[in-house]
Image (cartoon, rainbow, N blue to C red):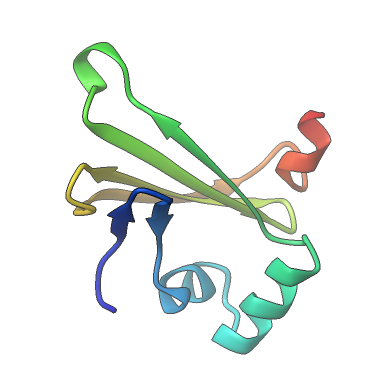
Length: 91
């Protein structure tokens, strides 16, 4: 898989994209996701951003964010330090 896929269940991001963003192997990334150490959030755009989605992944105080369109085309990528170690702290 080379791009983000969108279907009735949501979005599928290639493991290599997420792993590379955090400097992990795909195996390490999968293990950390299973343990809940890598969390994700999907936000739908509204108004001028309708038809776009933000896919955010958080791990070890860092966030990797993709903005995609309805076809799953990656419009932008960003990596930055997070104030919180993962989205679970939002609860």
